[in-house]
Structures are given as structure tokens and as C-alpha cells.
Amino acid sequence: MRSAQPGTDDPSTRGWWERRLDPDRSLGLRLTLASAAALLVLVPFSVLAILVISAWWPLRHLDQDIAETLHGHAVANPGWVSATQIWTDVFGPGPLRVAVLAVAAWLWWRGARRVALWAVTTMVAGGVLGATLKLIFGRDRPDLLDPVSHAPGYSFPSGHALTAALAAGVLLLALLPFVNGAGDARRRRAARCGLWVTAVVLTVLTGMSRIALGVHWMSDVLGGWVLGAAMVAATTAAFATWRGHVGRRPTSPVREGMVEEEGGSRPEPAAHPQA
Image (cartoon, rainbow, N blue to C red; front, side, top):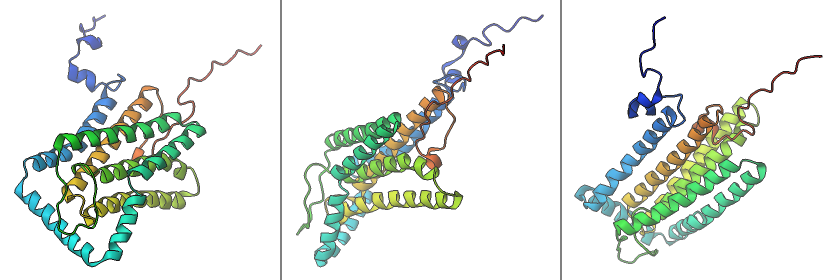
């Protein structure tokens, strides 16, 4: 018999990169790919942040043009301003956080406790990160003549846009499993599309309302959207890695949402010999 190559099957002899790409290790392929995906989502925010810090002229010019155009429309249309203010208040950070907390409590009551914890963790981590970055960048808000609205604090990234992206992503992924479990295929597809459209519309209109009211630059809102998407992607990747670690079936969060089956993949009980 031929002896095995020394170190061939010994994980301790493999390099760091080989261990990261080993699908049989709990911190192998799944975690590596998940981390890479979250990092890639953060790249656009990093680029945008660098352009904001450096006061890149084309970005400043674009921000100024959009702010002045929307501000002129706002000054000429007080009714439009009132409607925009109502939207930004109803779908502001406070109400959206309460909505996510209510859904998390409902999920906890139904037994999906890990999904509930994921939802709360995503919102808290995203909010803390956004507030910290505001202090780090210290960007001033637009200073417009005859302002139609006011907001305290710094500008980049937009807290409203960030929270809207976080809440829309969390609510979408938390509710998708319930939509997928009801009705025929056509109704499930329509319901999935409805949830996605609602999430996108909520995120976009909430962010745009801040520009329309003259309290944020366009780049602030873009930064909030991208940072929110990155946070949801990172925590979703961590949840998917946990599922793989405990041996539960792989899922597609985009189609199925945050699925947490009770019991997971349990070993079958041994058959008792018949007497």
C-alpha cells in the first residue's frame, strides 16, 4: 500500500487562503464569500466618502445644482413642501425603527427568534455606524436662501436615507418567507414583486424628500443608501453563514428572505429493532 502524502489531509498544514476556501470548514468558503460580498458593497460608499472629503469639484457642482433646482421648486410650491414634510416625518428614523421593532417582536412571538435578533441588530448597528460617520466627516448641511425646512446635526451620510434603506431591507427580508408560503405560484410572485417595489419606493422617496426640503445634498442621500445596503448585506451574510454552520438548507435571501426553520437538519432517530 502507498503511504499518503504527508500533510495532504491535515488542515493545519494548509495555507490561510486554502482554509478560507475549504467548503468543509465552518469558517471556510461560505464566510469568505459572504465577507467579500459585504466588502464589495462597501466599496461605492468608500469611494463616495473620499470624494466628499476631498471636495471633488464635479460632485460639489452636481450637489449644488440639484439642491438649487429642487429648492426653487419648493419655494414656488408650498403645498408640495407640506406633502414632502409629511412624508419625511412619517417615514423618518423614529417611526421606521418602531415598525422594525414591532415586526421583530412579532417574529419573536412566532418563534423566529434569530431572525428577530438579526432585524434589531441590523437596525442598531446601522444607526450607530451612521451617527459615528456623521461625527467623523462633519459635513455641513446645505445653506440656502429662504430655507423651507431645517434639520440639526451634520449632513453625511443622511440618517433618513440610511434608516430607510435599513428598514426597507430588514422588513423585506423578514416578510418574504411568509409571502412565499401562501397562495399559488402566480400570487407568490406578485406578492414578492409588491414587497420589492414597496421597499424600493420607500427608500427612494424618503431619501429624495431630504434633498427636496434642502436639508441634505444628493451625495449625502447616496451615501445613506449605499451604507444601509452594505449593512443589510453584511448581517444577511452572517445569518446565511450561521445557517450553513448548523447544517440547514442553503437559501436565497433575495427570493426567500430570512428563513429560519424550526429544528433545522436534525439527524434521523435510529430505528429500533423489531422484537
